[in-house]
Every structure is written in C-alpha cells, then in structure tokens.
Image (tube, rainbow, N blue to C red):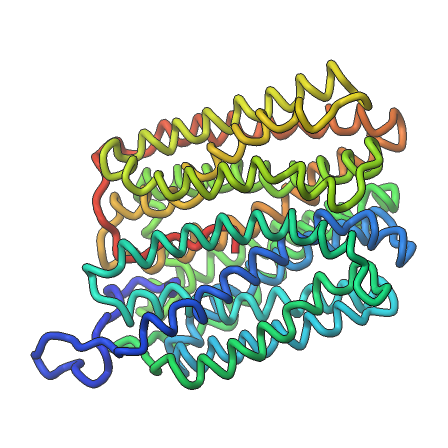
Length: 495
C-alpha cells in the first residue's frame, strides 16, 4: 500500500518467490490472523473511545475546547501524516518488523497517555499513538495479502471488516464501561492503559507467528514530499483547531496562507520528481481518472462528517442530557451494531450491484443525520435514547456500506499497477478528512455553544454535517457503475 506508481506487490511467500512454483503459505497464518487484526482493533478503539471520554478528560485536566479537539484530532492527524512513510518503510525494512515497531510505539504512547499529568503530555502522547498506528496499520493490509491465498482472502477481508465494526462498537461502549467502573479510581486513564498489555502480547505473538515479507521491489522514500505534505496539512489544520478559542489572531491567517503554499509546492515537487524518473509520494497521473477524483471527494465529505458527528453528539449526550459516560457509550450501540452487520453484507451487495451500493449507503447516512437533526430540534434537552436509536442505526447502516467499500469501488477503475498508489492516497485522505471535520465542525460547535447553548450548537453542527454527507452522496454518483469484482488491495477503513 505504498504511494508509488509500481506494479502490485508480490503475494508469494519468500520461500517460493522467483522459483516458478505455486506459492506456499505459512501454516501458522490462521493463528497469526487475530494478532494482525488486533492492531486494526486497537487503532479504531482509540479513535472512538476518546469521544466518550472527552468530557471527563476535559474536566479532569482543566483542558480548553481547543485542547480537547487536539486530543481527539491529533491522533488522526499524525496517523494520516505518517501513513505514507509507514507503508514505504514496511516495504524497505520488512512488514513484520515495521508491524512490531508500530505496536511498540503505540503501546508506549498509550502508557504515557494513561499516566498524563496534564493536557500537554496527553496531546503529545496522542500524536505519538498516531505515528505508531501509521507504522503498523499499512503492514496489516500487506500481511493479509501476502500470507493468504486468493481463495482465502475474501474470508480474511470479511473478518477485517468485522474487526472494523467491532472496533467502532468497543470504542463507544467499552470506553463508557471502563469510565463507569472507574478502575482503581483512575477515571478515564484505563481507556489508554488497556492497550499496553494487548500491545505487549501482540508483539510476542507476532515474533513467533508472522513470517517476514517484502515486495519484489521497493521504492525509495521521498522525504521532501513527506515533509511538504505533512507541514502543509498541519499549517492548515492548526488554525482550525486553535483559532476560535484564540479569537483568530494574525498567526492563524498566516498559517492558512503558508499551508496552502506548502501544498502547492508539494504538488509541484511531485510533478518534477515524476518527470525526472524519481519515486514521487503521489503520482499525479492518478488524477487523470475520474473515479479516483470522485473517490477522494467522497472521502472528504463522508469522513469529515463521521469524525465530527461522533464528537459533537457525545458532548451533547454528556453535557446537555447529563448522560454518564457508560450510558452515552451505550447510546451509540445501534450505530456500531448496524455498522458491523451492514459491512458484513456490503461485500456481497457490492459484488451484485457494483458501486451503486455505495450511493445507497451515503443516502442512508444522509437520512440518518437529517433524522438526528430533527430529533434534536423537536426534543432538545428532552431527547432520549429511544428517539436517537433509529436514526443512529440508519447512520450505522450507511457507514457500513460506504466505508469498507469506497476504496474497492474506486480501485476497480484504476489500472492494476496503480492500485497501491490509489489505495494509499484514498485511505490517507480518510484520516485527514476526519481531522478537518473534527477541527472545522468542532469549531462551529464550540463557538455556537458559547453564544446560544448546546442544543443550538448541535443543530448548527448537524446542519454542517448534512451538507458534508450530501456532498459525499453527490460524488458517489460520479463513480463508475460497473458490477463489483474482487480487488486484491483491501480498504483501510478509519485508521
């Protein structure tokens, strides 16, 4: 899953590569599968669990709204910023090795997040968690592809999709349960500390069960491209997160301009590097494909909506309706269960109906968020779980049909030798979009809350989310309508 314009990676076991014989697969691969998928689970758990814990963290550490947004969005930002480099390093030094390194970084960062004495340490630990996820998650996809036969991969990738759904459910529900139990009087801290023993166990088992693998040929890093892209997005995101609380000082506008200039410089550098026969981070020829462009825009709208609605609704439940963290987490159960079930069914529906099913999913999500806005408008602070459950389930159904399928739907229209680059760029966009959604819509939410109260704030945020989902739905109509077909490179959903 590297962002380079090269043929797809070899799926042969190293022992048979280049021999001309049929590839052989390690007999321990099914025992190793839960170990590999545990990384996916942890990476998703730590996205969603912080939404439930956000009010408790804010109260305990006396954090401002902007710091709270950094705690939530900082993980996705560093995850996205390091994803490309993590994938490339896996190709260069070995996927198992990078997987273990990523697990180690993630576990250590989780420990420091759990013992954070103040918000500054917590934000730094969350950024480090994101970089750990960026090192391990690209290897998950590559290891699943390399270690299982083509006949086994549909089952394996279905289990991958179930893990995505379970991570979503667990982040919301188990996070609330952990906060409710208040283990050892530690409050929110166990939501991070629980990753430490899981990470250690995964490292030990990975060393025993997962064989090392590399592609037949690996491209060099593009450090200048990585630096330009990361700093550019950071310069644009920082004022979105911090600007409202600081009343939009001059530096925020300077940062916007500087970020735009850095992104423009990145595109120029990638074009020049490609013309010189180098190894660009992003082959610009991908933008010649309408399906690829549409897929990027679907990701932009849909993931910006998903990241923001989870944060703002959680704050409404706990601060507005005075739900406990556990009750707030359980309120999201219909969304998580519907997501898991529809993602299981999505693969067969996509095989039958093609990318049209992605449009159906986006439409379902739009109906759900419109219904959520209606409930909040009509009931206000009298809203209850019974009213919220159906609309949250509708959002979950939509998410389950869009998130696990969007990359697959786009890749069917991209030449096979470009699937690695296209998949990497699409999944990186998902993470950046979550950051921008949390920062942008979160800014609107907190500004409106200060002026008009939390009900008006959530209404305002939901109107923005309706616009984002409607935009994503419109972009799905631009995707090709060919019937579904198996794709070797799976989706990296919300990592």
